[in-house]
Image 1 (cartoon, one colour):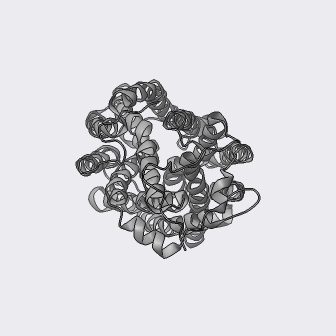
Image 2: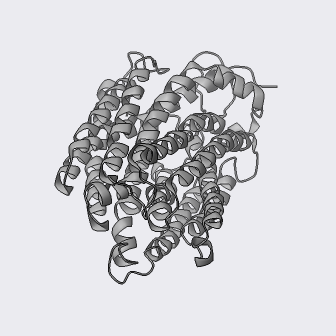
Image 3: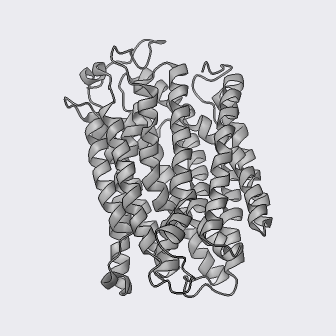
Amino acid sequence: MESPSPAAGTPAYAPQSRRTSPGRYGIGMLGTSIPINMIRGSMLFFYVDLLGMNAATYATVYLFYGVVDAIDNPVFGYLSDRTRTRWGRRKPYLIVGAAVLLGSMIALFTVPDSVATDATTLVIWFATFAILSEAADSLINANYGALLPELFPAEKVRARANAIRQACQLIAMILALGLTPVLAQNILGCPVDAAGCTDPTVGYSTLAVIFGVIGSGIIIYMALGVRENPRIENEAKPRLWSSLKQILGNRHFWTIGVVNACFGSAMALVLNGLQLYVRYTLEGDGLDATILQVAVVVSAIPLILLWARLVRRWGAERTWKRALPIGALGFVPLYFADSLATAVIAGVCIAVGYAGVLATNDLVMARVLDEDARRHGVHREAIFFAAFGVLGRLNAVIVSASLASLTLVFGYVSGEDPGPDPGTAFRTYISVYPLILLVLGTIVSRFVRVPGWDGEKATA
């Protein structure tokens, strides 16, 4: 039976004597982001363009694994919230998830010749390790995200920890998105179109090992330094059906969740399509892709600091609502970019709104969790974050449909059969589709009233 709801005004998270450093917690984002950014940023290019998998087949598998991943999110969250061990609720899952992610990521980008040359076996290999990698990422992030409100109940410290997290995420994007094309194609391997390049996949395989080891090591380092709140161990364990009923009945779950899904889907399209956009639309190479991605991410770092100042002035809700339409407008110049230089300028425009959403999104969701703990007297951060993740993970549906549309509308099938106009195909994929999604997210956000933010400014 659930604990009675605390009296109004009771803090959702009681202070604890043993504290976790915001820096120790925040650096975990570097570990969680490096592997998954390489996976999401290179998986499409690796399997469709390098290995020749049919784009429609890839889209079908991607849809399937996205649905599976959306289902496993609440399961992982529920198990985590109910776990009681001497090491805490979250730490065991973080360590196990890091180990599984390391192995599955390496396998995903290390395809044996016997598998690569057989279309059916290649699809099975891709589906198996893509699903396993994403499941491990879900397990890690359900627990890592749930620690933010628990470890840092004070708004000021929470905002500081979140700022460190987002800075680490941007550093991870520089490494795993920005540098991946040049590292995999020009340093550890060879460009796909270069004379004498017999295996353009070898650089990606080597880099998967390097990034996998680094990412998993950082996750484990962070987890070993976490000091979970022992007082929560004595609470009643949340029940599945009552939790799901209360979460699904929470209007903030639907409105904020839909906005997050729109934003996440737009970014997913950009991440997995950028290398193909550079190759076909800009007619560039791996170095050009690296320059474009690094320029965008580096520009976002000082922008996050600027948005953080605006959060202190306006509050997270107002700042969040202003960042979304700015992010949408950034995709307009990207459509008209016709060179690396103009694409970089357009990318910086996107970074303005992207940084704003990063600076506010987790603060908005943490407020919803605070309210839930106060109302129901039970801490279920992981299942709540996982429920948000269900909507976010379903971006696989959007990505799959968008990719399938390239075959239907533009005739793009694979790197071996790119169709008559792959440049326009990926120009549309990486700019028009994200613009539509963020416009939708902006509209829905106007109906959101974040708990605790009415007329209140952040204290960070």
